[in-house]
Image (cartoon, rainbow, N blue to C red):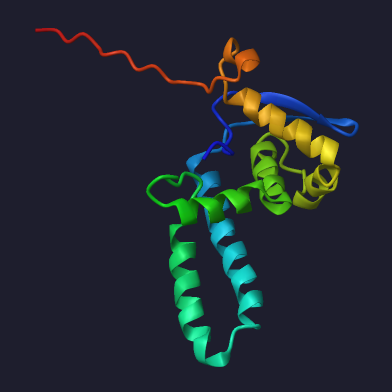
Length: 160
């Protein structure tokens, strides 16, 4: 899933303020994934109100199983249904807002989630943000050609 923020830092301007976005730490990724699971279960609870009482138990078992598999990095081919759920949450306004806030708050601990949400409710700002995320995840030469960033691992020479 490419919605995660890469290892490069960027400065963005929202309204009159500039913010430095940092890569997400493992702790922040875990925090986002926990929020994702919670948001999914909250959504499913609301939907369950319209499910016949005799089917609600099975509905929650399935919802819980799906929630348990939600993560920032889901293999699209191995778990296409889980990927769709995770991707839709990440790309939602609340998901994008939370990712942005997590990326900003390390350098700006006083920034509030709602403050970021107000900026991102403007479609042009959200579009600009998504473009910035895309730039952060591509090589400088690939930005114009649209090629995804590839990591190259070179085999180390071993001493004998």
